[in-house]
Image 1 (cartoon, rainbow, N blue to C red):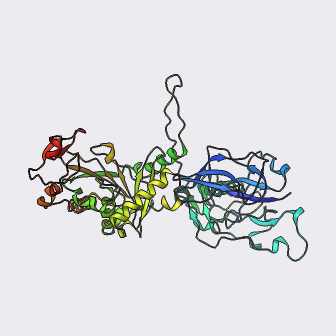
Image 2: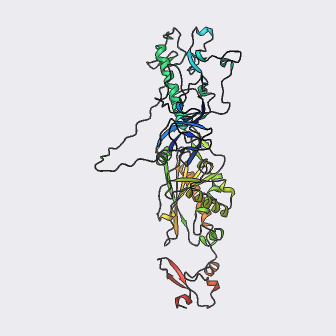
Length: 525
């Protein structure tokens, strides 16, 4: 019997630290072939198919409609059906002083996952015999990597002589993990050698530190001996909250429990939140929950604005969205704080402008990215909108279509709203809302919501004012040309093409809109 493949939750986007299993296509113990679709994950933006990498028998360690953290093992493929059908009672618990990865694997002091056949055993001896002391975050100071007794290979190429695999690249931290690290005072160097660190990994470290402190018996201001006779390393918190170096260390901040309103099944019907809606709440609540956002509005005079714009549009005639994306993307280079986000302790300004537009056509709210929109023409932006919208409807969006969005535009002009307050997306500092055009007043409202932690009202107002001037510059001022382009709503003949020489009649169309009708159509010819 052999383990052929472990399926872990992939890191598809920095923001998605957990993924939801939405589809399981086999049962545990079933035979699968290489290339078979075995499960489907759902992210905040799209779905992700997982295929079998080997022929064998699958064992699922997950359930549908449950969330799992990045790097967590959710399935395994074995060469033997009997082993695959052996149900796990649960994840292995870490012994005192041992750290487990999110998938249940033990970690070394550098944060590495131990290979099969190794375990962490307590050291014997004295600190002077080589035990590293003094580092307040060396939580594995009491442990070393040793092979299991019954799995020691013979010969010079023993497992103890082989170096452990070590991640040489940059370690990525989820937002929750970063916040927890900052609040608890853990040194990020603890996680060296890890490709990704989740909140669960940080909690595991904190639990280990707590276990070490309780066994070490650290007292206030003294380095008391532990159960093994070793003094506690400086800075490790004790059960009383004191460290061997002096005053109490910071304890991790706990997130207050969210209030759950009562629901009487006799009076209401409870509907389970989809994973997409949960992430929408998380992403939109990230900035709004601070209470440090404001929204300002400005009117755009739309009279005669489409006379020239429609010449550049093939599909989205009488729509301001392509032009707004075009002008906003170019303008953001002068307003970098609106193309940024708040990290929790600093302002991160994006180097590129990747404008996204919100879409929701019965397939969930998504924000689709038009990369480098400021370098595209209006027809190219229109084409990108059509292509991305088609992929959205066909469930064919790619990860790159949904990530690294630096500024968002949400257009509700087709819904007839006068104005609204758009909500800032996660890892953005602002969002622009587009309202419907008032045909009588010939104007529409643009609404900009911004994060006060990144920018200020004066700069946001200046941005809106300049955007208004740019958009209104598209209005046709040549009334002679405008009058010649007037079209009969029935036969679509322009005034310039009318040979009768009697002009058009201003009227109300059957749809209730203002329009014009030529003399021939008026008289029924």
